[in-house]
Image (tube, helix red, strand yellow):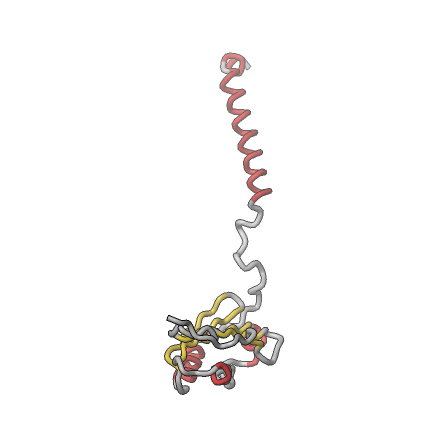
Length: 156
C-alpha cells in the first residue's frame, strides 16, 4: 500500500494505459471484424481441384483451332477465366463457336463447381466489335454472351 501511495501517478498512468488498450482493441474489432478469416469466406468449402494438365489440354485444344493466336487460363476462387486472342479477320459468330467443345477436359464435378468466363479479343483496335465476353454459371448448361455491338471502324 505504501508503494501505491508513493507512486500513485505511475499506477494511474498504467491503469489508464491498460483501459485505453482494451478500448482500442474493441474499436478495432468493430471496424475490422473479419481479419482472421479467409478472403473468400467459406465459399471455397469443398473445393474441387483442377490439375494443371487439364488447363494445358484446354489451352492446346483452343490453340489448335483456326485463327487463334494465344490462350491464357487463370483460376480465381470459384471462377476460371479464359482469355483467347484471335486474328483480326475473325467474326463474332466464329469466335463464339470456338468454345463449343471447351468443356471436354473438365469433369462433371468441376463443371458443377466452377463458373467459366471467356474473354475473346483481337489485337487490332480499329474495329470495336470485340472483345466479347461469355459467362457460364456452374448451374447453367450454356454460355451467355455480351450484347452484340454494331461493327464500326475507326477513321484515321
